Amino acid sequence: MKKLIILGLLATLLVVPQQAFSQNGIELSGYTGWMLGGKVNLYNGSLKIEDGQNWGITLSKQIAPGMYAELMYNRLVSNITVREYGEPPYVFTKMATQYFHAGAVKELMSEGAIRPYGTGSLGATVFSDQEGHNSDVWRFSVGLGGGLKIFLSEHIGFRLQARMLVPLYFNGLWFGTGGAGVSTSSTIVQGDFTGGIILAF
Image 1 (cartoon, helix red, strand yellow):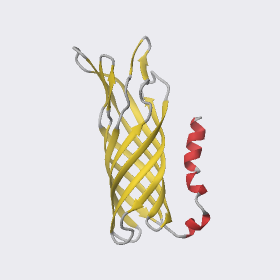
Image 2: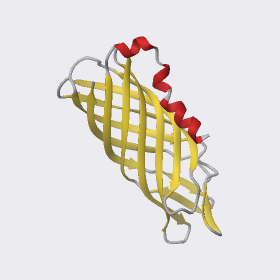
Image 3: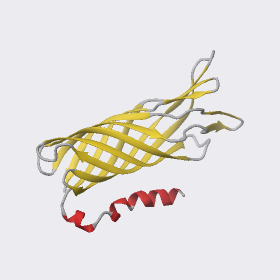
């Protein structure tokens, strides 16, 4: 199942008509920023994925004037903090949150050095316990955001972005350490604010 999801995301650009690939416009972007990990409710408190520095990479291919198909990878590693009513908060484990998404970018102004844009994506989110207590948990997720591309030249620019990321059916997730554990009871909303360099080909 995991391999099928990844292969499906990687195949997204391959199903675009070949005519589109003759229009030029490949952009490779590496970025970093600050990600809001989000919080979910427990039956007796809350569980928070702590905010932290994230990083990622995007590969975009122009398919029409001002329109790009895009593949995205995003990663955050941070602590999970549990707060139970009447008890001091404690770190439950360290977890990596990874996004594998395919989507589209629409530039609102496709000419000029400064190009505002909107973006939407969908794919898989993987929650990986970094301390080895649990197996990876995969969830379908969606993303929605916007930002600015600022080109210094034909081939080099900057990309600034704000984005909301929502893993679906986060509820029911169980984190356990042997005989003890916590389970969530609601969905989670994450988001990030990032900046990076664009290499255009």
